Amino acid sequence: MMGIAAAVAAQDHTTRFLALGDSYTIGEGVAESGRWPVQLAAALRATHKIDPPEIVARTGWTTDELAAAMAHHTFHPPYALVTLLIGVNNQYRGRDLQNYRDQFRALLNRAIELAGGKAQRVIVVSIPDWGVTRFGRESDRDLAQIARELDAYNAANAQISQMLHVHYVDVTGISRDGGGDADMLVDDGLHPSAAMYRRWSEAILPVAQRALSDKSAPSPNPLPRR
Image (cartoon, rainbow, N blue to C red):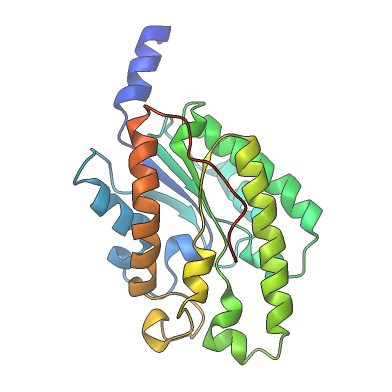
């Protein structure tokens, strides 16, 4: 059995990166190199040793579907970095906000466990606004309502992130800034292009660098700006 000192050393020297989520994390419609976790890992290698991301994500997954997949996935903790971006499909399907809060908190606690119990190694990424996309505009849905509901979801995941002392990065504002432009979308008119994911990874990069340094407390988690 591994002793305490050896377990701590394993946590300190791991280079594994785990990315949990849905279509935004798996990068629906983009090449593997265009996925934001892959772009982030490439950028991190300028300052840190980090493996290519282990991605547990699928297009369409809700919080409960991600949890079910994680229950059957073989993980190899501890991970040096864990990211979590989930909830857009809960909102799209009209799921209850309290249900999202409960399931998101359980997922985040699991993410912290997979980071070796180090909350400062975990980053929550906010849910982007799909209503600004061509698909959103052509969906006959109330775009203002979509924005309000996503703001509520993000207020919930930001508050839980703050309570559990993990890092938080708001990409929702980035998604609303030109996120409906043709070059920011793949052919389906809904999912972000590699160019949009590059903007996300650039926003996440300094937070990930701080998380990997493990020398300071997690960054403050104010509610997302709108």
